[in-house]
Length: 209
Image (cartoon, rainbow, N blue to C red; front, top):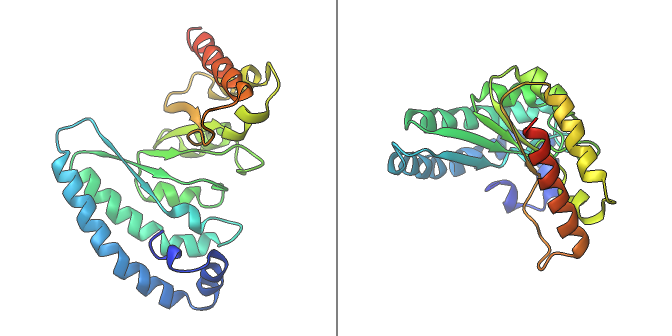
């Protein structure tokens, strides 16, 4: 994120395709103070029940950048970062919107404990069941309730989404159901409120079964 924010995003993607070595040098420079900060944070939180959330990989996901570029600009850095978090006795999460199907093997290489928000299609490109099968219990996953649905879903649709998730989980552990992001609308509309409450009610009913 620190490096991509130096550019217009389109320019960043073009530079990754045409001058990857220079982009990598910028990331190397940005990474060390980031790592120092995280090591200090992990040390301060030692002994606490804490998950440190990391972000940034989403700027390197397809279709804008290839899995091969993700493997160079994300995987080695996140692996080091997460290793230090684990050394501090804490767990690490990766926040990555968008299409993660092609880069999921790289995310697994980092050793992260949780991936979120697992956007469903069409914003994402992988189903919850596919994520659970591919991760095989090696990390937890969180999300899959698309935030936009709360703004426009008709009555009953959020209950159906919960039913779909309940069937996809099929007794597996390691899944946390949540919206893909926090609400942006304040105060929220009546439609948003009604759909949010419907989602919460359906989740409670199904998870008591």
